[in-house]
Image 1 (cartoon, one colour):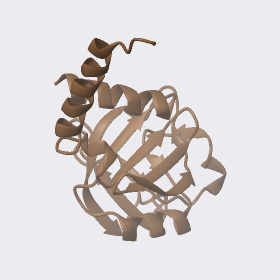
Image 2 (cartoon, one colour):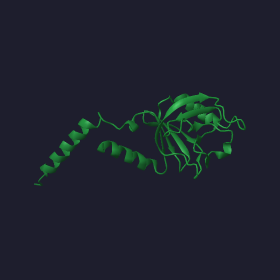
Image 3 (cartoon, rainbow, N blue to C red):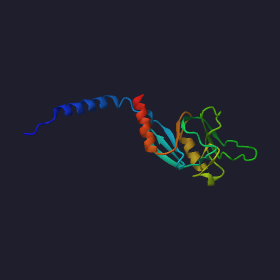
Image 4 (tube, rainbow, N blue to C red):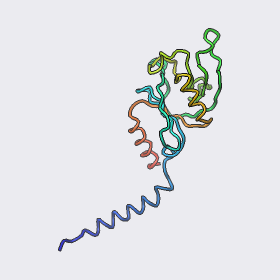
Length: 169
């Protein structure tokens, strides 16, 4: 008759009970809240609703000299038909979503563009550019306060690091 290692079974049962007791109560917010994730290395914007990917867009991001800042931000303003500069009044396209990017006084954001050739490239002065029809669609789906995460590199690695840092804190 084979002997069952009872000690290891009890360890797994206790571990499963602890995970079951804690996990449903304390999920990291990034797994269930609406948010925007921008990957500068791929020039992609991902919109998540309740943790599920809803839409993916091609975007343009900042040049090396005027790089799009990385980090966690939130949308602090929304504007239809924003006014650009006297020499180029349509530079921001049809929509503007301002971000709280570290004291930049709402001068950094996600917006449309009058130059669709910049989409998929690193050409902006730091803002995230979208096709006008795409930014209009996103504009309707997000609210002021929606979190925006801007990073470079693996999305899977970023989520894994986010969950680990949340579990440790």
